[in-house]
Image (tube, rainbow, N blue to C red):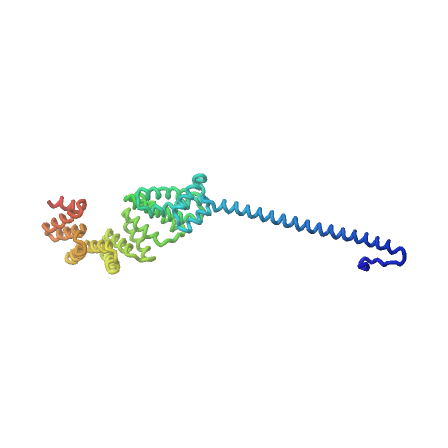
Length: 341
């Protein structure tokens, strides 16, 4: 141990002094080592303290931001509710946001979309119309400040909202707006399988038969359905193109299981045959309906027209009376009875 300090002991009486010197040096060295150990311990303690303090600050900051972002009335909660298709929550949350930030475009868009879907699911027409009106207001405001990539979809939703507003109100004051916004969404590159169907129905409501036929034809190229086939057949009938209409009507009759579609198809076919003076085939179509439903007012009315064409007014009036007995407000039968008293 002594050699570690490079001290060589000397003989004689001087030896104890060397020992004292050695001990003094050892004390100084041990003191320096102790101080170093204390400083290291202090730095470790300070490091642990600052790490702990930093971790606590990060945790509390994260918790604050997370709670702020994911609060019940935040944009993040809108996306969460939307992904779960909870349209009531989306509608309420976006409404709360708009109460303090009326021009928040994200909230406006969500409010418009959720209002639209709530209107479709609502059985109370008054409440459904209120949702639609609120939806239209929000969608139009959102469109004013929308990003370029959102404009096409917003116009698509506006077109659909106006279409259902027409349907709920039982008039067609907004069919021109349906056409305007849906065509603009198409021009902007938006794609949806139902656009041409809505366009076809809206053109038909405005009496634009050829445009309606074109739109329904485009819809049929994307997907085929009984309703589309029947709709395009009705427009060909309006356009006095019975031969073309018959092709679509026969397809509906061959494939559809919907009784309402089948009745309408047989009525239209019977009317086409009546106009072609093919009275035998026409009567067959009307009788097919009456065999399934003897209380079909339209079938009795159409039979009356058929008998009128054949000159048998007694049978014609009898069918019109039956029609009015089933449906007292049938405008066609009322007119025929008044003209043929």
